[in-house]
Image (cartoon, rainbow, N blue to C red; front, side, top):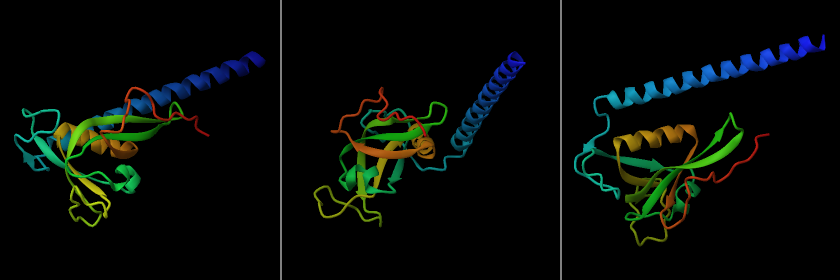
Length: 176
């Protein structure tokens, strides 16, 4: 009787693992389809030909990407200004592993302009106002990566003079 219970438990665990794998495959397929539909749309974002970011990607079409932070902690405490270089990172929870990770999405991108949350331009030497939005010039692929990262977790801009190692999870906590 005890062996039958153990076999039943093993079968249930295997069935759950298979179901989780199928669900994961379905989510990945949906994400790929979502990306295709956005990319195949007839250029919903104005393309600025020949613009460059610090990656010197003059051969790829670029777009203006506006990142609006929900909180100034997501945007270098509001101290990021036009001309600064930033890395965009996302912090998210991996449900399967039960841990929280932070990964770099893009790095060394020059901020074109910084704005207050009301949309007013913040000059580089203005120390009295905090930036709540930044304007970046990125490739279309990078813009899609940023949007997907924003849906996945908390997106943040980190000034380039701050160090960040994208190969190591910044935080890995066991879920409760």
